[in-house]
Length: 433
Image (cartoon, rainbow, N blue to C red):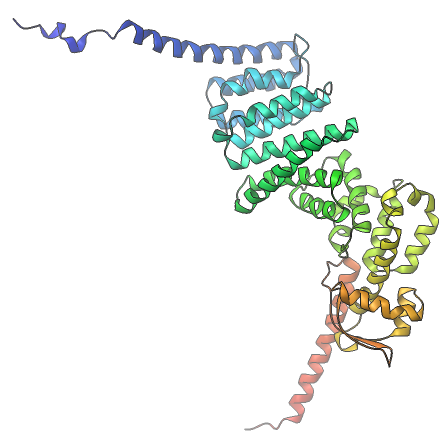
């Protein structure tokens, strides 16, 4: 007896428990999808002026256009002044969007963009009620998924979390030694990751900016002025658009660090950056003037500014505590600029000329020269009998516009001399036919 084909065991229905599992998975996805769409519809109804944005997010989610959805949400949460609102229950609208929409499809999103969205949500929690605990939890929860995130997004979130801790400690005026050690370790490991990243990657700039912002803030809290200065320059290099409110504070901090930092002599790097423009017309205009004076090595203008703004300087402990170093630095920079302004064939300087340019007494010139030689600002030899110094090399520098014009003029003079030499040599050599 044979089983008819339509009753074959291979055509029997699947076991009932298998069918239940499939239905459960499908039901779960539909629940999360429906919840995300319903949330967007509720927020669009609650805030009609944002209906277009929420409807767009809902549409992209429903159509599973994950890339477009990620970019749209990132743009949305990056403008808190116009899009951050309250939910019907009085909660933070960004956090609600993150929980109800983003986290339901986070595996399908670009992980670095997801990290940037989480950082924006955390920032909004600080702005909207200063909820440090919730902001911290948002970032820490995402960090639990390191294996999925990958190195670059993980470093981005770790840097944002470190920055969150540092800003909180500054606001509360309480330094947590254990937390600071943890941040130091994070920055140390993060530096190795940055070295391995390809600078040409599209996400490299964002990650570098986040890392150096955290590192800069850490150095401000526990580091030396020169360490802060180095990290601040790197942050500015990777961050073309600094928030207006931060520009003034960073410009003030980086100026003070440059003036008081040990070993910081190349002021052209920061003077030519547009960050210092935020000091123009403010109560710290004198700081900008000082930076320009140091870049030019003008001792006498330095004395005028410090005399005119004595009270402002007294209000800056960073300057008053390192007054001797600042005075030494402007003296050395005066010597460096004096050498730099001269043609290479005319760099034998009389002690008297050095004394006049640096504003020191004649008997102290030898010390100034020895100090410049020991710091590697110049190279050469000193004749103590004839009281001269011959300089063979001077520290390379970043030049401002006026210094570039002067250098161009020297190049023009050099070109004329070369042309005349060429003509002379042509006249002296016989012409063979």
